[in-house]
Structure formats: structure tokens, C-alpha cells
Image (cartoon, rainbow, N blue to C red; front, side, top):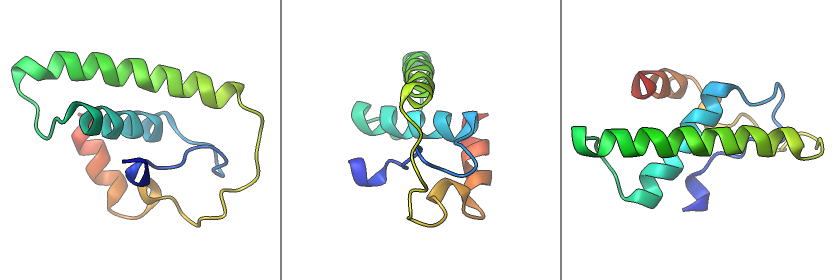
Length: 90
């Protein structure tokens, strides 16, 4: 599972709120086994994503600074991926 989660610490520029939210969505869908959203699951998933995004934002703010990840451009910043994340978040 962790291989699919994007590393957010040490990005230049720093991870955006959108990138944090997308990582939270990915985590919740993986852990919850949710591949599609229904009206029944949407509210629960949305609450979990919001909570994890907030916790991630707090974590990144409290961790000491670190150098570049050294992994090149993170997947969420590659062309085409950002657009699909934006569409999913709407």
C-alpha cells in the first residue's frame, strides 16, 4: 500500500493543499476498500479524507525541514495526473 502513497515531505515547492487532499483520498480509498463512491459511502469517505488531510497538514507543519526528496517530480505533479486529481476532488 505505501508504495502508492506520494511522498509529500521535502517537496520544492512545498506540498499544496490539493496534493495533501489527493494523498488523503488515496489512503482512505485503499484502507477502506472503496473503489467507487455511492451516496451511502460518500459522506463517510469525505469525513475521513478531511480528517486525514488535516492531520497530514499538521504533521508536515510540525516535522523539521528536510532536503529534496531526490526522487524527481512526484507523481501528483506530473502532467495529466493533476487534472485527474482535480476532477476526482470535485
